[in-house]
Image (tube, rainbow, N blue to C red; front, side, top):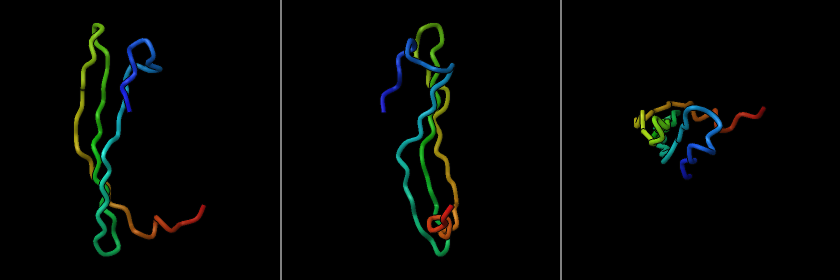
Length: 66
């Protein structure tokens, strides 16, 4: 996914979630991904956040029905 130009931004910031990886251990799924936050400051693109996040989800969640 490309980062939109400043003119095409719909908000002050742009968030990007990338590269999810899932590892199953027992009855849990460990989902690791990258979160990046961008903002144009004085006409220049700045990356304000670049971090790895981890979410732990019970495997039953993948089989739930709404």
